[in-house]
Structure formats: C-alpha cells, structure tokens
Length: 527
Image 1: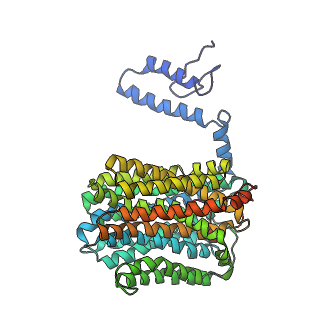
Image 2 (image 1 turned 30 degrees about the vertical axis):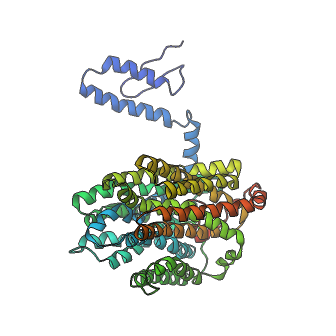
Image 3 (image 1 turned 30 degrees about the horizontal axis):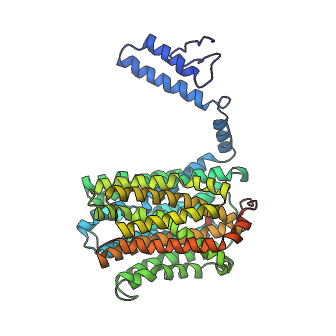
C-alpha cells in the first residue's frame, strides 16, 4: 500500500496515492500524534483540519458534484440569488410570527379559542390574497423595488408592538396581522426574481435554493418563545427587525431583476393598494360582526378577499378559473400546503391546550415539525417524477385523511399525537412537491399563472385550518370536530383525484415543457 506523506500544519499537499477524501484524514491523524501536546496546539490543529478538509471537499477537480454546483451558480448572479433567499427566509419568519407567540399573547389580550384561531389565521389569509396582486405588480416593475416595499410593510408590526405603552387591542393585532402577511407574500417576488438571473437549464436548482427560505419558519419556534419568556412577547417581536434590515441591505446592494415587464405599473400598484386596504377593512368588519353574528363572517372572509383580488386583475388571468382541473388541484393544494402553513401557525396552541405542554417546548416542536415539512418537500417532486404526481398524491391524500381521522376518533395521548403530527407533516411536505409536479404538464404555457392561483388556494386552506380548529374547540371543548372536517376534505380530494386519475395520468406522463414566463411571480411549487 502506498505511503501517505504527512501534511504540515500550514495545510500543504495532503497525500499521494490515496483517495482524495481519505488521505487528509490519515495525514491529520499523524500530525495530531506528532504535534498536539496541549489545548493551544489542539485549537491550532483544529483550525488546520478545517482548512485542509474544506479544501479537499470543495476542490472542483476532486468533487464533481461541487464543481457542477459552483458552475451552475456562476452561470448567473449568485449575489441576487442570496438576496432573494434572505428575502423569502425572513419573510417566512415574519409571516408565522403570531403562531409561537399566541400562548403569550393570550395572557395579555382576552380572546376566546375561536378568536385565537382567527388571529393566527389572518397573516396566512393576507399572504394568500396579497400574493396575487404583489405578483402582478412584480410583472410590471423592478422586482427589487417591490421586494424593498415588502420588507418595509412587513416590518410595521415589529416596530409598532414594542413601542406601545401597554397591551394592544385585539383589533390592532388583526390589522398588524395583515402586514405580517406581506412576509408570506414574498415568494411572489423572491422566486421569479432569483430565476430571472439564470439560464433555463439551472432554473430547478435556483428556484429550489431560493425556496429553501421557507425554512425561516423554524426560527419562530426556536427564537421567539424564549425571547417572549425573557422580555415579554411585545418586545420579542423586535428581534425580527435586524433580520429584516439585513435583508433590505442585501436586496439594495445585490438584488437584480432581469425579468421581462408588461402592463401598467400604476395600475398594478393601485390594485395592490386596494387589496391591502380592503383586507384591513374586512378583518375589522368581521371582528365587529358586520358580516353576521358568530362565526359566519370569519368563514366567508376568504371568499370576499379572493373575489376582490381577482376582480382587480386583468381578465386574461381569470380565464383558467373556468376549468374543472384548476379547482381540483386548488383543493388538493389547499390541503397539502394549507395543512403545512395552517398547522404551523396553530400547532403551538394545539399542543399547549390539548397536552398542557409548556410554551417553550411547544414552540420547539413547532420548529421541528415545520423543518420536517419543509425539508421533505423536494423529495415529493422527486417521487412524483418517478411515479407521477397523480399516484403520489393518491397515497399522500389518503395518509392525510387517516391522520386527521385518527385525531378525530381517538384523540391520542401525547406520544401518539406527536407521532401522528410527524406523519401529517411528512405527507404535507411530500404533497406540496407532488402537486406542483403536475402543473407544467397540464397547463403548458400557463405554469406561472397557475402557480399564483394554486398558491393562493393553499394560503386560503391555511387560513381555514386554525379558524375551524378554534371554532371546534370553543363550540365543543375538543378539537375532534376540527380534525374530522379536514379529514372529510382530504377524503373528498382523494375521491376527486381517484375519479379523474385516468385522464390525469394521460397528460401527466408526457414530457413537461420548459419553464414559461411567470405571471404572479410564480415559481413552481416553491412557496
């Protein structure tokens, strides 16, 4: 066996005759035996180890995968990609901010269970509806300006809440929740702007990297409950400001939008402003009982908001709503992505109420579940590429229905409940990726448009989940009716897809077209 030449501590050549990843390890062991005698030497040695191994694993000639990745990133504007990632990441963090803080807010603001559900659902609904008009605005003007506007608007709650002399009113929290929704609407700008700086052959990689920002939800459960416990929940919201400031600087310095622009900027801006103002008026009207007593107003709010958003859009964007398949895939995504974001907003309340779990532990579980759902999403697309999205979704929708009915019938103890939630989040994440694998097959030339509409449907589904859970808890004292409702919806989606499977399998097994222009900022699948 060839001898391995020892590597000096300054990090010279590693070896001759060994596999490139094994030789540095052998050499470093010899150095350790010869040179490391105390803590100072150990620290110095650790630094040299990191340098040598980093060089080994990032050497393009020795690592083809890394070489391909670097080449792909160099084929476009990687700084703009990083800025877009930060925008989406911090936007997602801000978007679900109310979720982990809801148990702390409930100590200072008197709310029923239904009102708690409505509070954490408002940002989800706002993002779903604002996504449509914000994406329309992106289509007509420079995406960097739109993104900076989004950062400013989403920072308003983190500025206002710490400055209040006392606890805010419930109505004010609802209004601020609309502005938190601007964070969730960021994917209407971040993803297409990232993709606009790269050639078509690497769009999948680029959009996947930009969309990894949805892992920003993990930060909510890890960071904000601990800050709320130490400094109060209102002050804890200020922790989002440094993150947003870094994002704004990155967007200003690095972001670049090379996408084609069409339409009137002023008209698109007016449509966005009307939608934002209408949402604020609507949530206040629902809170005041203007749309009926009890829960009626809350339940019809998404319908009214969606009608307003669609009404202010150009007519060419409304034509696809006349197709049956559009509504079926909207229903499916309202269950998969709606389940992911809705449960992420509500699971902290669910765990503290159902299992009397401490707030900090519940926030930790929220982060872990959100991370799990986000990390498995790309595998959903991978599986769908091999068995078709139709077959994958039939299995995943059945799994979601079983999980919901398990809670509805059994209401398991804490260990069983956590296990079922893990299974649900895996199904949500895989289902998200599988759903959007179908879009470019069925709607050739309209992928971006459908991404916007289907994404909005997912957000509306995410609104209804915490609302219905809160109503069920307040009305019956249990969450069983809420889980049963979503189990029925998942079963209906499964049934519709099962009946259409023959038609859908015919077009879903054809070769997918290349990525088309992106109305609504729609990057496939990657909210």
